[in-house]
Amino acid sequence: MKNDYKYDQFGNLDTDYYVERAYAIRRAYFAQSVKQAKAAFAKWFASLIPARSGHTAH
Image (cartoon, rainbow, N blue to C red; front, side):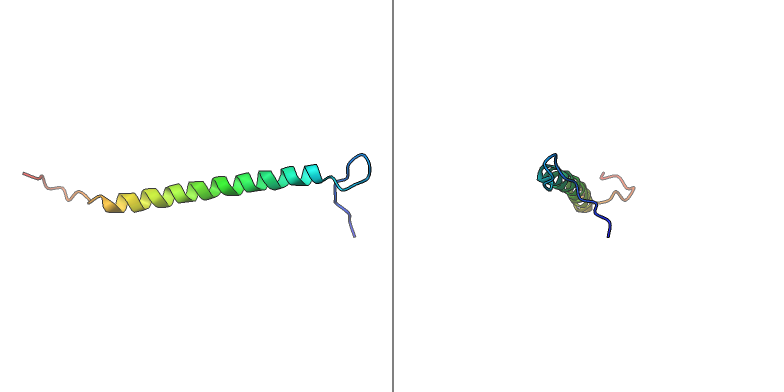
């Protein structure tokens, strides 16, 4: 079994490294969620505006 864990200089599991990786993953996930929410909101908001039929109002 291959051991891919990262250890600190004292031979302990490097928790700072893994906490920072978790923060980076969380930031990426949150950024993607915000982008998707923004796109969904823009699509919803655009559906509220009536489409132009090509006819003038007067």
